[in-house]
Amino acid sequence: MQRTARTVSGLPSIRLSHASVVAPDSLRRHRAFVLFWFARVATMLAHQMLAVAVGWQVYELTNSALDLGLVGLAQFLPSLALALVAGHVADRYDRRRILQACQIVEALAAAVLAWLSVSGFITEQAIFVLIAVVGAARAFQMPTQQALLPGLVPPPMLARALASSASATQAAVIVGPALGGLIYVAGPAYAYGASAGLFVLAAIFVGLIAVARRPPCTEAATLASVFAGLAFIRSRPALLGAISLDLFAVLLGGATALLPIYARDILDTGPWGLGLLRSSTAVGALGMAIWLAHHPLKGQAGRKMFAAVAVFGAATVVFGLSTWFPLSAAALVVLGASDMISVVVRQTLVQIGTPDEMRGRVSAVNSIFIGTSNQLGEFESGVTAAWFGTVASVVIGGLGTLAVVLVCMRLFPALVRVDRLDAPHPRSR
Image (cartoon, one colour):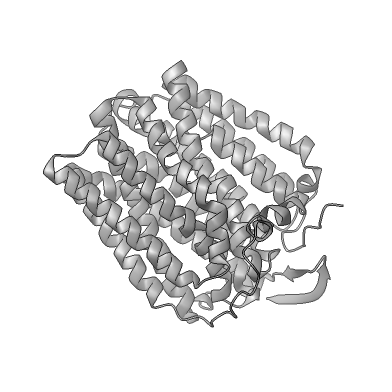
């Protein structure tokens, strides 16, 4: 891998050679990255198992599509409220300790859910409150995790580290829901308990990471510094376009909140079917992540991102209309694969073009646009399902995603023109 000396607007241009992308063992020699990789797998497994258990239990308690949407809203509100503050914290304090604190809070929330389930005191209101606690912890966890990764490997290896990290996440997303669904058969408390244990394991892995201490931040905590991430992204039109496109695609195409309804009422399966449906999206994403790690996008990256989001919308429509389990699962596989292309383009634009002292705040804005939109998308799906019906809700979301692609191509021509991902994205003038 080679790094050129050329910069534009203070941003380094990093050129990746094919040999460096496919080098088999280089990442394994970086102990800090290996520990980070295992911590991310454990955390994602825990979150996926928690999502399956909460979704199924809420639907068992209420039989309400709206309440399934409220689960997403309960996570979205604290994430939105705390995201910018979390990014500022990630740029000022030890990112490892912040991650550990988040994982311990999440473990405690899962443990309380397990206790309430065993004792018989579980209610949908208690679930919403504890899921809101998890959402608050994730508000700090997401930007901190994204900002920590670039400091664990040499800069020329960042693209490979991002692909490997994405692969780890998707592998956990495949295993987690299916495992959570199987464990849930024994009782929700077992699924919540397993999730709590995985959060604790992740905290242990993070505690073992050794990285060079960054010099303490001397910048005063002001509103300008808190909102600096927004200003940075606004000055990069291609980056703003990529984040905005993902935001609306995820918001409109967020059918995952309705998977319990599809599993039980439309496809006539049980918790195991719900787990497999959740895993199907990750199967496609993992396959695409592995492919992109060995065959990176070499040109017309912006146009390929738009095409991928259009495929995402079409696959959402197919899933919404399907009443045959294999076709539904296949549509989710395609949906996950197309979404991964968008994720890789966006994350590469963010990480390569952002200086380390800004990564927490830029990642926080990214998490507002993308991470919290997952929860808001779940709420939107629940509301539209309550108004128009489950199938209509998913189909409307897929068609809306296709419309968003056309609109964003007109609004963000700089993203359409993005060719190579290793080229810097200039400031707006």
